[in-house]
Image 1 (cartoon, rainbow, N blue to C red):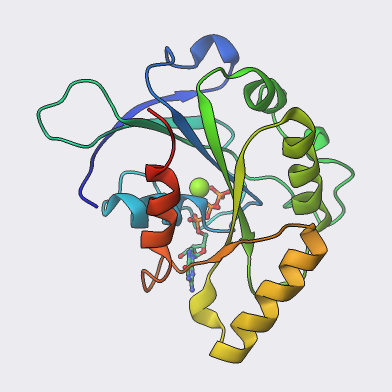
Image 2 (spheres, rainbow, N blue to C red; image 1 turned 135 degrees about the vertical axis):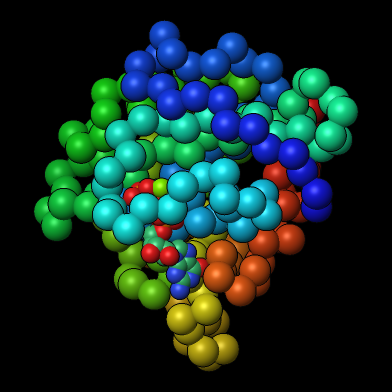
Length: 196
Ligand SMILES: Nc1nc2c(ncn2[C@@H]2O[C@H](COP(=O)(O)OP(=O)(O)OP(=O)(O)O)[C@@H](O)[C@H]2O)c(=O)[nH]1
Ligand SMILES: [Mg+2]
């Protein structure tokens, strides 16, 4: 899928969010899970920076994604959210998330799909389960994507997927690797299905 991404802005408060102009896809997950790498893999570019230091991004970074080089109107907006759960003991997501994240997830009119990234190499994390509970409670459509699947063998992948699905109480999820490109087309298929 060839797309034309453009970085829009970094928002630290709701007043700074860009005007809703296209269906929005938000990328959510713990610090270091691979959100920015996933966005880069989807876009085929380095538009989203990849951090070596987890938990540094405290802003929501917005990108306008066009599906034609000449079209002005973006087909989607991508939102790269700050990571949560880096602290070893996390009481709740909202306790460590910047205060504008909950309102963003609750109120953003154009938010059409939340892509929830979980590390496929580690057991279910409480903060990930909390995020999924939260999205379910506010009625936001979401897709769970297991990241860094290149680190798992075939057998371990099947096992990891089952454990994560059961632990998170979800019917289906995708396993991906930003490094090898595995599963990236499947994520695109889900994004493509988002209504214009
Ligand atoms: N092996 C492997 N490593 C990955 C993959 N995706 C990301 N990484 C590595 O994981 C680290 C974190 O990646 P980021 O994309 O910056 O993670 P992030 O979720 O955006 O992190 P924050 O913005 O700090 O919350 C980097 O060192 C990446 O190179 C993957 O698919 N496979
Ligand atoms: Mg990042």
